Amino acid sequence: MEEVNNGAYFLGKVTNVVLFGSMLKPEIERLSDVDLAVELAPKEEDFDRARARNYQRVEELAAQGHRFRNFLDQEGCWYWEVFRFLKGRSRVIALADYAVEKTFVLTAPHRFLMGQPEQIAVQHPAARPMPTARKRRPSDCPF
Image 1 (cartoon, one colour):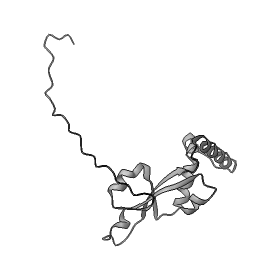
Image 2 (cartoon, rainbow, N blue to C red):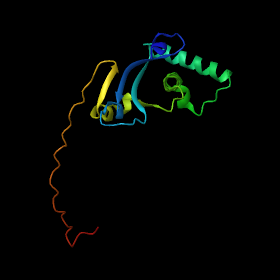
Image 3 (tube, one colour):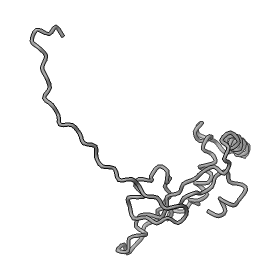
Image 4 (cartoon, helix red, strand yellow):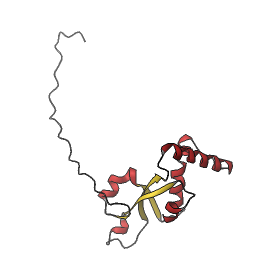
């Protein structure tokens, strides 16, 4: 994470890292993987400059023979580059996107390794109105 955040090559930075899952359960004897949720953000604060740097990186990678599957692959190049580097082809590390999986991660046993700990707001189920009996159409109704 330090290499990503301090290195000049990567266009993104790691803002949150949360350990969750079986690593935090003492009753588990044999661990299968290390579950980490990471949140990434662009290093460049200005959206237009960040996008221009991303397009420049896309062109560099395309010149080296990298093929992008679609437009979204190109737009998220900075993100996927950092995500793949953190994963490092490891079969043991299971990475999740913290921004997407936040509700799940925060309800499971977890520990923040980087970033500010957060709490999720408890959502109470909305009171649903009682179903009412459907009214029938009058027999003389034309439709």
